[in-house]
Length: 93
Image 1: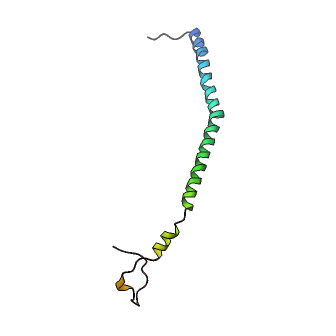
Image 2 (image 1 turned 45 degrees about the vertical axis):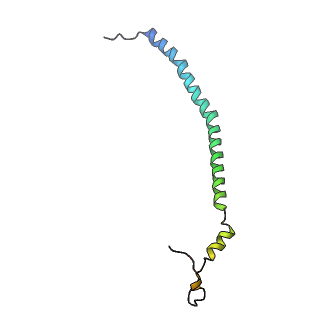
Image 3 (image 1 turned 180 degrees about the horizontal axis):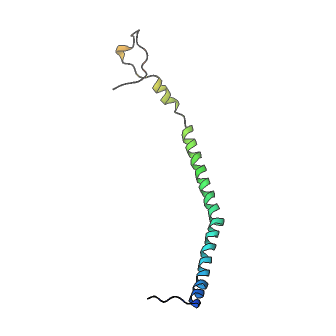
């Protein structure tokens, strides 16, 4: 059978556990009050930079040369003088 701890052992156990638990609690408070705001600031800055990069990527306009090429596709010689044909808008293969 296991012996029950006596009063001195309980007091010594509490006195030894108190500094260890105090160190853990202090470390948690330091992390919460110092490190967390720094991490939050870095995260917000990273998201802001990502939003700027995405905004610049969406602002890019197609070049004028591509627009001109898309507007006028090459017409075969056989159809150039046909009166009832509309200009080609797409090419299907």
